[in-house]
Length: 566
Image (cartoon, rainbow, N blue to C red; front, side, top):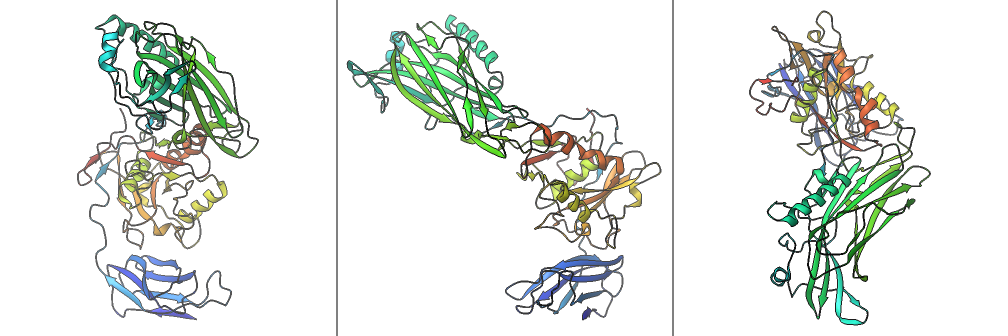
């Protein structure tokens, strides 16, 4: 049985089509509606299941004559035990083009010899305050303290809860107290500052990644840093008697093709106290699960014998993931303890919960196991100079679609899809090469000497692809339609493709564009060839997309001149 709806009059040039579904008899998830338009017949698959009366939109189409909508009682998955509802259809004439949806964009000619850009790996700040929980005591003046200085700076009411009593000296307690990170401010006004600057230079050599940023915690895909201040304190009769402060830098260096990673730690006196001598700090690293820890190797002593000793103590330790399959999230934690004249202080523990390490043996892109910081979201950089039309296509959709797919500015990362068969299925949905819904390129996209190609965004290799269930469209005609067109004076622009019967509403979940074939093949091929291996991406890992050259295109109502060459 087939039902036909005709409005009995000319509708157009554009109209929205709505179908009504009742609260009973609507059971199939694959009702196939056919819409006759001025540019051919379009199909929409509708899930009729629901609990109440409602209207469902089939889309906005270009009509130039008396249209027709058809619905058959036969579906592609029918088994004869579900009802199909035939109810009202509404045709709502109007002008549905979105004014200024595509900015007046001017693109240069592609440069096939353009060098490949480096993917962005700017460090991301994770957490203020430092690695230790509860760190945050007020900062104090930097510099070597004399006895007179100490009398004014040491807080007699400072908390000493949990300090360790010294055996044989019931009035004396020792503590190690972490504090919020305070990047050292250096001056050459005093000799002690010059010595401290030299010690800091030694620390920089030991932890180069840490020394490049003043944040308390920051990381990339393979490098992380934790920084804090640490006080070693002595209390006498309940009052703070003496204190040393150290800058603490902890760098973690991972390898995408190795299960062994290195940690580099530096301790530098930041403020010293003439009344405290023979101070030392020990570090005990741990790693779980399926993880072994090597010996802590100190390249310089972790003991400061006098208040004028300002050397930096550097340590290195290796840890190795021993898992035999799949992947593990490793919990790294460390315990610091101090000694004052050989007497043990309390301990202070910290971990890298915000910077957990993932090691795996399942990444398809690498024959070797390796480790990364999976919570760092890398950025795929499109070669805008080589592929300006494709870059413009991605950039417009990131700006205009409600989901802003791949946009860092809108905090809308994509999720990598590792299944090659599923990627291919997504491509078949969005850019079919055969059948009644096959993709047909816009003639303007292939002037003499070029070929046009179907480019899709979000990429087929992502969970946000328009062909990916559960949000999957029936076919690519339901995506935003654009095409690249050459300009009379040279270069290219991007326009809405009106050769399709469905009108762009800019509420679509996906887009496809007719662009020169070389650009389509080059714009995204580095994802699988380079980006995925370089970041050891596993299924569902997040990433952003960047299109260099579009930074100045902020007012989309003005002409946007894109300059992809530096």
